[in-house]
Image 1 (cartoon, helix red, strand yellow):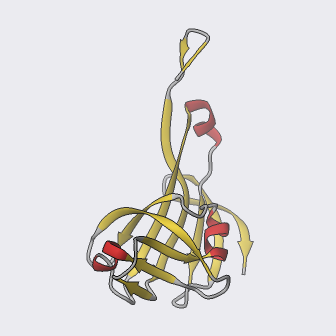
Image 2 (cartoon, helix red, strand yellow; image 1 turned 90 degrees about the vertical axis):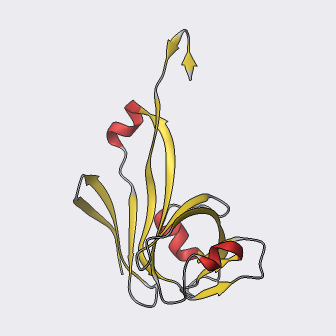
Length: 141
């Protein structure tokens, strides 16, 4: 990016994360994507149709797809299409979205992290502030 003859560096950082969600469904005969309870998406600051990175904790699979909003309060985490082959029902996964920003914006950026229970109900939502350090609560359920 160039602004008035000055090059501005853009970097990509974690913006929102749903940590250790449990896969509830896998629908192979679907166009593609991951359907996620809209309450979880909102809490993590992830938009519908946003590109996300999925990590399966059980088998190490990592892939990208996009989100579809599922029913609020359902706890739904449904892998659709080819993604259904990467994650099994009941696998623990991490859903991550990233944002591109200037280095100046990155200096004060704090990603939203949503922690869920075994039914994908929100337990706590927090910000990461520094490597390995979790900051102040945003929401406590």
